[in-house]
Image (cartoon, rainbow, N blue to C red; front, side, top):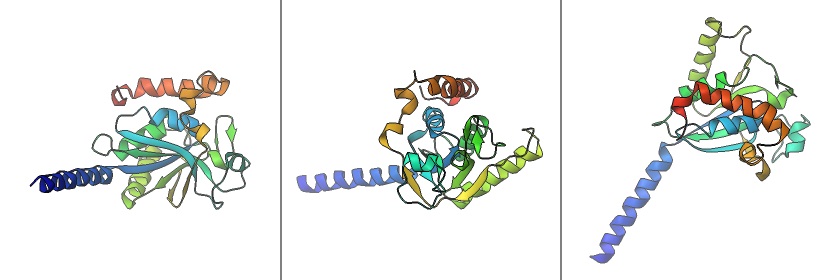
Length: 199
């Protein structure tokens, strides 16, 4: 009987773990420097994990220096794992379009190059349709002065960035780039989306 109870408890635990893993979804966004993207999205309720990295290119296991040189076809992105029961993909899109300039082609501020382009790598057909619809509505309502240039592309690869890029803003908040570029974006985001922030 004791072995049977242990078996049942183990089975239930494994089942619940698999259910928890299956309920999460992934979004992959490029919106300039991935330090900014990570610093913003990691504050949202429902986001369980976020990894800065490189996506969309043709070079395997690229380095930061290679991507910055613009010779790999990759874009700096953040891969966001989220619980759709706490935050929906549409809400992530709201944040995405609010916190960067989706009308700037291959640049964000002083960060220039294809690696800093605005892009959504969709993981499902639903994400593709939602992203395209959202862009269509923003353009129709002329929310921005210029047309949105954000690319919507199928997810095909992702390479995590080097360890020193992870939690970059939290660990290097006194660096000039963090103070001048990332901090103002984060503060603006926190004011607009204060109801969606983690406690």
